[in-house]
Length: 223
Image (cartoon, rainbow, N blue to C red; front, side, top):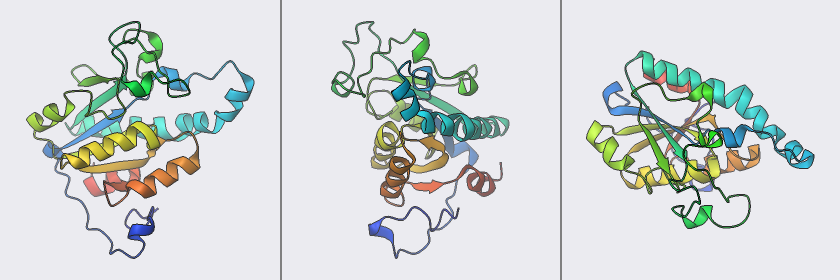
């Protein structure tokens, strides 16, 4: 992969290669979104389990290991690691946003203390790390994360998690609108299918963020 030329949409087919981003350690944070038990538990329904098998394979073999490695590198260099998750405050979910109350796949009822609402063990927050709880797609819209990042002096947000075409996309756009520089780590994200994942990366890249691999990011940041 070459992040300067890959994932180009129609709008940026002939654009010049971007310059390397400046990512000082004290101005850059890693934000991990929604990698929770509910999404990594195979369905009891054989058809659904088969349909989602490629997603689970990508998560277990690529996304979770790569994200864990990135988290550890940030921690070793004294850099901030933050987390966001979907969870409602009320057991009946009355506090959820409309998108999570609509019928269909996106319907979510995840009371905050229930096991399926927790972040997976491999990516669990360490003591002292900030975790925001949201009932919205964007991690900024439904939380105080915007204020927290500004107060911490963070200007650059490295983003990982799921789903690329939903909560990741919404968060990327919200961060960009708030004038944060966003780095989206392509092998630390996933959508329901690889096609959806790639298409959304093409849509977001160079307009709202830079799409980059974890290995390229490590080399750029020298961490």
